[in-house]
Length: 140
Image (cartoon, rainbow, N blue to C red; front, side, top):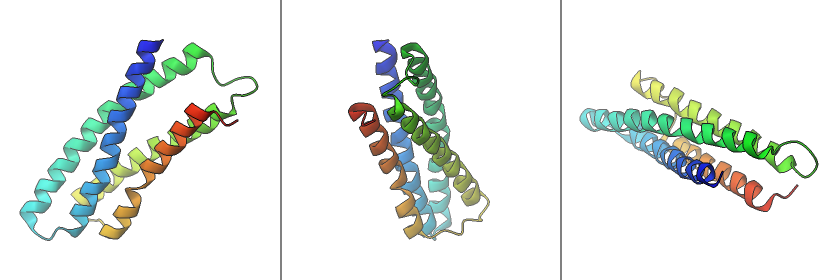
């Protein structure tokens, strides 16, 4: 199980690296006025979203493997796991929202400002903070 845990951590870190950087590209896309630079940033965002999606899959599979292998989630003292799983669902939703925002940029329909994307960029930091605290501290 330690190998699975190690792989889970590596893929989670890699997935989050993409979730940290993709909205930063959105900030630049929302500000860019030069067509060539806009297309370059759009290509970067497409590739990063695709790669980040690929990284999310083994992260989730290894997490499910750990969840089933350790039998965590039932019994007293495991409420932290339910809270963590809720936050993981929010991370998946955030990933999906990034894909939706990317499609809006691709179709020229972005309505959000670079300032909005700067705030949006902070969401995965808060989600990761919550998840790490729940897993390490197990407060309930």
